[in-house]
Image (tube, rainbow, N blue to C red):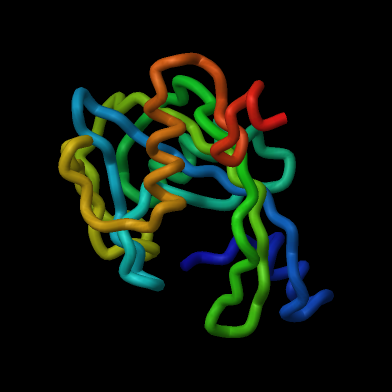
Length: 162
């Protein structure tokens, strides 16, 4: 997985201590298909995910990540969900936790392929026949595909759970 230069610079100062980072999940939809990638680091299927660069607008980060990782051009449609990941400890000992902004994206053009080495596959899947993936990633896809316009907050009902 490519580590952004600003994270490398932070790691030089803080070592493996926990970092709080902002990230995006891009759920790209084309008709009744969703774009997924098979991650090179852990072999799991997920929507496209990535870290927001300093000063970058989150929707722009989602567009950039989709293009960098799959060669597909997509446009943001709506914010589907906002949540916080569990603390992640990488193989090298680095610890990170992410504020995730999940976007529904509309496919514009391009055939998916693993474009930057972060993934070993990139492919379209029917929404009713997704490969095995974590409950967290399935929840992100569901939040992006919700028919109403309200974003989901960590899977909570916006009225009932507060």
